[in-house]
Amino acid sequence: MFLAVENVGGHCSVAIDGNEPSSTTEQIVADYRPGQTVSLRANATPGFTLGRWHHTTNDAGSRDPGVLEGSGDDVSSSTEVTLRDDPGCVWICCGSGADDCAVADPCGR
Image 1 (cartoon, one colour):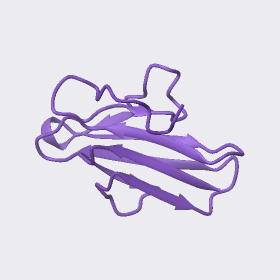
Image 2 (cartoon, helix red, strand yellow):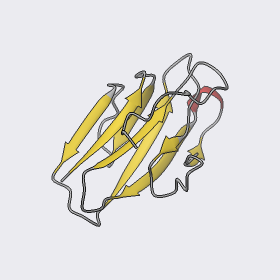
Image 3 (cartoon, helix red, strand yellow):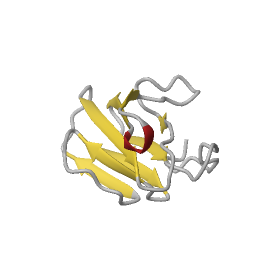
């Protein structure tokens, strides 16, 4: 089983399960089992604003702000996703303003 983490635009730095953060637009991590909880953490890269998570455990349809830590340009958002029997996909977008990256769902949901 795998988890795809989509970083729309590549303007966030995303860490999966405490691993090294990356600003690539897609990270795919394998070898997860159904029911496993995966931790996620994001920071906006310089010049961008941290957005909200989509399809995480705490996203009830209105996006998940995550647990915010820090302040100003050094704020991060932490959340998690519990995987089901199908491959998982979550996404976040760090934009250039108050818009929360109004884009089509890259997970296809």
